[in-house]
Length: 137
Image (cartoon, rainbow, N blue to C red; front, side, top):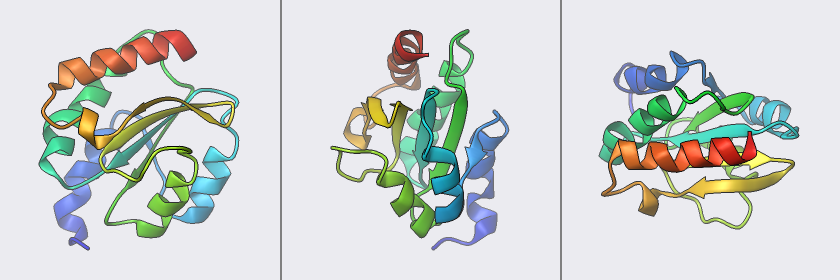
C-alpha cells in the first residue's frame, strides 16, 4: 500500500466533486445494496490512466445535466477490502482498476473497464459516461 499522503490528492480529485468515498466493506454494503437509483461506482487507482483519463473523465461527465443520484468510489490497492466488496456489485466483469460502473436496479447498466480507459482521451470516456447518464438517469 502507498502512504496516504501520496494518494490523498488522487482521492480528493473525486471527493471534491461530491463523490462519496467508501473505505470499508460495511460502507460499501450500506451504500451499494440499494441501487434502485442510478449509482456511479468509480474504482480509483494510483496508475497513470486513472490520473490522465479516468478521474478527468468523471469530472467532465458530472457536468452533464443528467447524472446518477449516488456517486461513489473505492480506491484499489489501498482500501482493499472495500474494493473487493464493491467489485462484488460489478457482476459479469473481471476486476480492473481503474474502472467506472453505472449501477441501476442491482445490475451493471454500463461499464467502462480499464482496457476501455487506457489509450483513450478523458473527453472520449466522458462522452461514453454522458450517453449512459442520459440513458439511465
